[in-house]
Length: 119
Length: 110
Image (cartoon, rainbow over the protein chains, first blue to last red):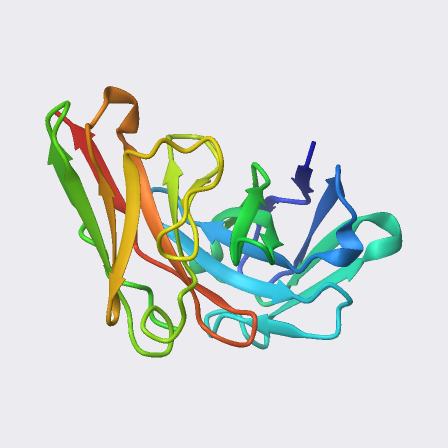
């Protein structure tokens, strides 16, 4: 079955960087667009970024544009999120998510990895 | 990229019906028939309950239904059950592969 397992979260000081990974299994990663979504403690879901199946198209939420970079390595079934110039307001659980072209929405979510930005 | 607007909370007694609204703009909800709804229990990953405004994936009870009028989508849950108590989020396609979520609605079953 589909599994998405995030890693790389932790505590980081404001202004520093962190790289998140998402290991995908149970499906062929190279045929699906993938998203990152975050959820701050006690808050709602916020869409962060998307990458097309081949990595040719990438789009970002205004709140992270210019600071975050989404990428993928289909040969290793892995999705990445490079986060630079981190701010306190970036503190959240970050989840990778598999988009379904059939359902036109996110079909599967990982459990997420917690990123805490604090001095 | 403003979040879609949902009521913060709704409530209903077992057996009753509740409706959760989700208001966006012509650039998202109003512009595409790609609205989905997610149910999230505490500490769990979201589960999609409705896609393409009105459709249910297999396994989702027909007590859950969706609709849309203009820039506002709605999720109706009929025959409320205790296990329906959760947070609900709407999500809309917003063009160029992007998505936008609602702020979430906490459903309390009284």
